[in-house]
Amino acid sequence: MYIPERVLTNHDLEQFVETSDEWIVSRTGIRERRLATSADTTVSMAASASRQALRVAGVDPTDVELLILATDTPDKLMPSSASVLQHELGITRAGAFDLDAACAGFVYALSVGTQFVRAGVYRTVLVVGADALTRYIDFTDRGTCILFGDGAGAVVLQASDAHEGVLSTVLGSDGRGAPHLYVDGIRPAEVPNGAVDSVPLPHMKMNGAEVFKFAVKVMGEAAVEAIDRAGLTLADIDLFIPHQANLRIIDASARRLELPREKVFVNLDRYGNTSAASIPMCIAEAAECGRLQPGMNVVLVGFGAGLSWAANVVRWGATGIGQGE
Ligand code: UT7
Image (tube, rainbow, N blue to C red; front, side, top):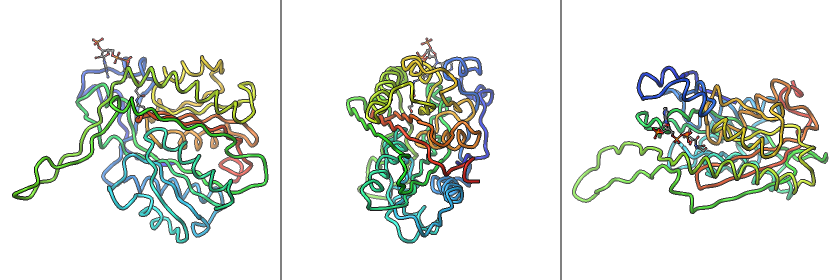
């Protein structure tokens, strides 16, 4: 994983919007978040996380056959950030594309990558989640500016004969909810008769209450469906890694699933909502601190703009941070 150096605490936010550390912590669980600096781009953050993932997996960049970058903040509209990332990493023999399913993007990308491995098309796939959503935040809007942070995380998928890796997949989308969370495209209002000056980046708009209701419902449902498709029961689940948007959403989902707190991974207090990066950042930290052990059954659930959602049950393999080195 990679996180930018710049820290924005709740107390910092108190200086420029009407909010308080107490409100933010009690309503969201977030204490601080990281903001991309001028040196950070989606590609640079993704590259840093990817290099670490490749090193831990012991995979040479030239062995990667497919690169999927989940992001909704690509550095450019074209080419894809995945193409630029591919070159940056020295990956020379791979297909590469961006995948946008907002905060559900990483689980979507992991699901897509898995299908290529399962089908025997590719043996080594790099899956990355990276976002710099704070670039699209209106820092006078207290309903959104307190929530988001920037970062990246990456995993390497490899073909294996063992019964491990991604065991099941659930993907969902309900476009009726699109107006609840969006960032407009950049489009100059008038073009004829002269140049259009640089257009400011649009800001994220969110109906927090609607997204909240949707998230609580879908997290539990998607998790149960994924567990069922994997042929497991809730009792078989060792760790729940939900998208890190709001601690109240995570707690409500865990209660619905009757999962004890120690089986739920949370790091949003330090990073806020990092969109497509949140789940791979959790995976990296969980593996690093020993909460992910070989053979464990893990549920990943993402949700976000779309409205979209995705879940996987993963059996953690023998190679990874904490195991490989
Ligand atoms: O990846 C998906 C991304 N999005 C989400 O996951 C968002 C999901 N939604 C949420 O996390 C929550 O809805 C929020 C954290 C955004 C808002 O929390 P809430 O408990 O739903 O608050 P609310 O919107 O119902 O607002 C309650 C009050 C309002 O004041 P009044 O009208 O009761 O006087 C808000 O104006 O809290 C006020 N408020 C704040 N006060 C202090 C809203 N934001 C803030 C703030 N500081 N930052």
